[in-house]
Image (cartoon, rainbow, N blue to C red; front, side):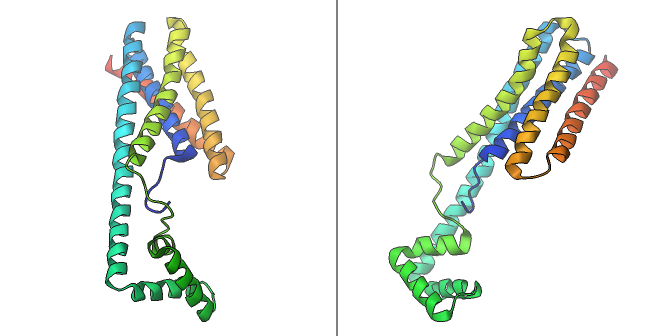
Length: 221
């Protein structure tokens, strides 16, 4: 809706993928260093909490900036309408003419829209703003992103709790790849892009992240 961009399904799926990859990478790094099961548990919980908090903060800052920009645009349009509404009416008429509407019809349409709600007409046609962002919007969007990250992070944690120590590294690796495959397919479908390409990109990134993290842990210790 104009300046404001809520996370949406695709954004939440990406946040979940980030949670999966981020936490799995931390676990593989500690596993490569020979960490105990208790250390791996603490590391995975810390990654979940820290990643979710960071996701909330970054998404809130983004959405709040969008809301502030939207409010600035609305204030400018309100001021312009108050100072000289005839100029704004002319702009709206020109907007319709540029899209192929005959001049008289464009003028009549603009006048009807102005009579109904001049500000709403200007915001929608000039800036694509169809509804104002509420004060809670950025908080809700940020919370949804944080929860999606936490859900993704919870998968490696669940695998860690479910399997014995001798199988943790491989169990997490396989489970993460399966989970990433699911989220990448959902992202591709929602974005109407190539599923095979999305799978290749996401699985390659996930596998590389875990492999490099594991190698880093081995080299450090």
